[in-house]
Length: 218
Picture (cartoon, helix red, strand yellow):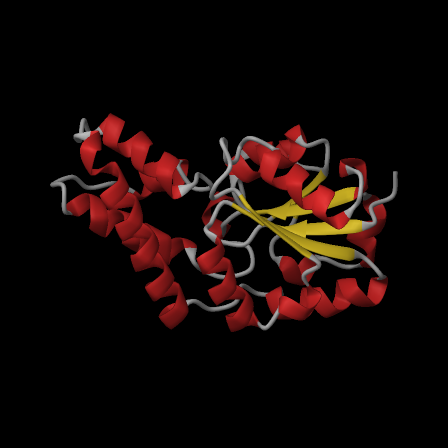
């Protein structure tokens, strides 16, 4: 089935927010006397903050009575950092008018809270292009579970089989494939060489590479 709909992830794909989430997470964990390596952090990208906190609290044996406090702290720090320092990823400002001109429906499906979606959408001025927004913030399961993508497709009134999704994280890619959608993955530059991205339908270097030829291949 030819795609009629494009659904975007947000963090690390549309806005260069992953380093800022990393800062927020590492700063918060430092308050509990532990530190993450870069490799450890990148392993857990794509998880919701609640799951991220639970994972690392379990790993470092931190008392989970502090979990909610840590989660709220990370989210607040991240929103403030992204609002102040976040910049658009290459191609993020150009891709929306390109897809609108082609007649695609456009949605956004993210693990991040809606409070951050609002900040990013205003910062990048993409609200006029978004016909549906789905957040996994309050869902029972986040990515790599496909629910947030299925919810976005439902809101757009399309079949999952009509959707192509753009992701930058491994957990997000798995969520897309589990939803039976096409996946274009744009990994971070230092992860581009990894074979795990072979599960995607197409791998690109940036959103600047999304063109008619790529869409025709799907």
